[in-house]
Length: 139
Image 1 (cartoon, rainbow, N blue to C red):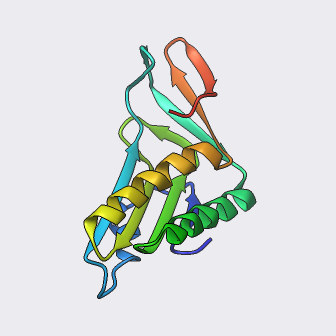
Image 2: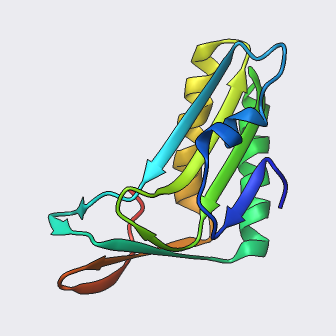
Image 3: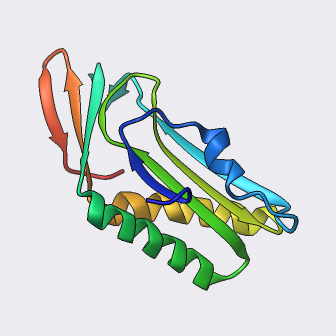
């Protein structure tokens, strides 16, 4: 995968993801950082486990970036996602979008994370004191 689109078992650095988008014309870079939280749907969460289909994931990341660019106003997009076991507080996903102005950057960043949750071949298993379950919904 490229500097713009990455699926990795290594920790994510949101500053490094945003840095691939720096351009003279980019007056706004909006970054979304998803972290493992300690609860979900009324249950304590001790860790999350992500599995993915890497070959398809890269294509989906590129597709999302193309969809965003087709809407106009966006200069560039970067999407990085973790796989493997993550502890509470760790970064699971970073989406960064650059644009000349803040409004298209905010709109595109939200679109990107929503689309990622809808179509990316990435699955999440929640571990809690009661056991582990695969998460079927993608809120």
